[in-house]
Length: 185
Image (cartoon, rainbow, N blue to C red; front, side, top):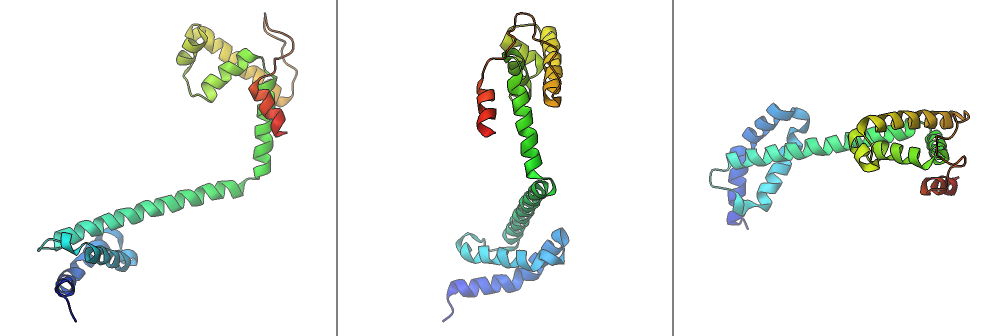
């Protein structure tokens, strides 16, 4: 037995399918047109009470949204594939080793150097903002940052440090960063 809803839907489908298909082809090509048109009419069937008497504009709007959702899904798939390629192209062990070396070098630095580097590199503060945090001028902070980066490069390369800064202990204090790097080794 054919219901009124089925009869209405069949009439709408027969009247609008070709035009919806042509719209989708003009926007996305023939490769996806059949799938998008099918999804558009499936939505129309589920929401038949929402479809106005003159259905074409409503159907084209639904087709446009389906296309948009397909583009977003494809972008997510491509981003995931790119991320997976990054993981598989390089050796993960090399990246972990490099990270561990950097953490050890950072832990070996004096506390003031670690704080300066962490404020800029990990917390994303500008030198001007970080200077406010440590309570010095922007120019003084830039000098400290330059020196801290130099000592970090030396520590990563395994070079002897240029010596402790004035007023700093010869041995760096233990810190959460050092404890973390020792915990991971």
